[in-house]
Length: 325
Image 1 (cartoon, rainbow, N blue to C red):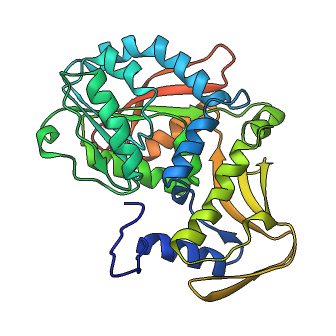
Image 2 (cartoon, rainbow, N blue to C red; image 1 turned 135 degrees about the vertical axis):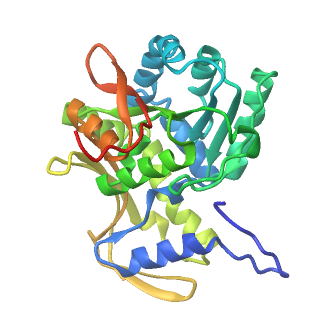
């Protein structure tokens, strides 16, 4: 859960994992806070707004690929699988897949409980004969799926190039956790963003309307609200930069001036120009993405891209481990 509330009078206790990550993030150098904490309700709403921006190409590009690819995915995967979506959010792309593959059940997994329940209700209404079994959880670890789908073959769904938000070794760990959750013989349909023109990449994460900036700054608002902070949010600015050596866009919150503030009564300072590193979005070449999947225990069996090769959707299978050629 994003926030576990235990009320005793006026006292509200925040998620201990959120507290630990934030305090550790401000105490270490360079400062960094995991991107998963963007997604309180307001953060989830802002991200959905980002996906509709003209600069943000991944959503519309992947959507068009899925429209073309899902009939073939249905043939390769076969009917009767439980579709398990990791980080389902508003599930805007999910109906494309569900309409094509004739699933036995749909299991959306997301860390944002309110958003999860709303999107699950919408999908249940859109697919009245389909069991929809939402799971509020952090999908970065193996998850016990609902009992009704335990014995079913499974098709994992991980769109949006969310895999790029993790550094490579964490991505491999996540793919292995997905394999553990879904089991051998399962399949995974995953979106991966490709390396491309730097200007297009940067503008996708620093839009003219400032929606991505608001999304980034909302993390500070959440810290103030849930961890009794007094961070001067107005004294930070959003930055998006391309790190060519690591093939990733980085998002930072940069102090505009020398600052002093507290979080749960603990004092912190930042000098003008210092940053909090809040998100990465790694971009993968064609071979890079396939190697990453194999390292995580998944064997690619089909791949689809847009005409410009800007984005890829890959279908992979969890095959038994091999220790020799």
